[in-house]
Length: 160
Ligand SMILES: [Zn+2]
Image (cartoon, rainbow, N blue to C red; front, side, top):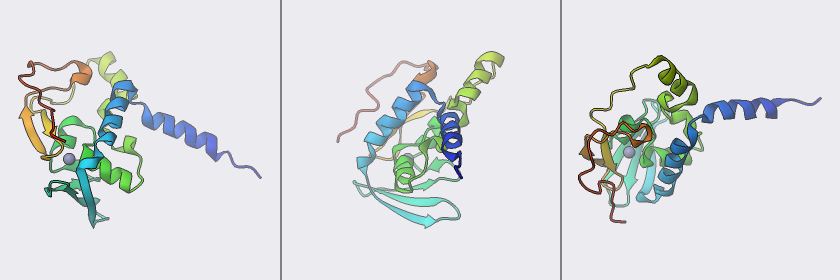
């Protein structure tokens, strides 16, 4: 008795990804930077809360359920920050489940076809992964060319 689970699973995963190359690239480059996280501790499985210790001994709190990190990067970008990505990887979860629906293909289509206003971006900032905090505000997400202010300096430069 053969089951057709594999085919079904592939379809679901395809739908789940649906983020396009630029977002995919971002997720990958985030993944490459998880070395700044030294240690992950679970606070509460039911709350989906984790404490993330960085190599510079700073501590952050990631909440997978709420889609937040105390560095604020996740909330600002709608993409898991490096700290959240570390937790997701550690828990062997599917990173695409944690990408804001805004970035998913069906949502993109809706936005472009119906001219839905994109999500608020006025307070978007740049998060320094090592500091674990927003270091520069007012920079909009380049993925959709919504950057309104020119970069005043190389904001994402890190020292590692
Ligand atoms: Zn973070």
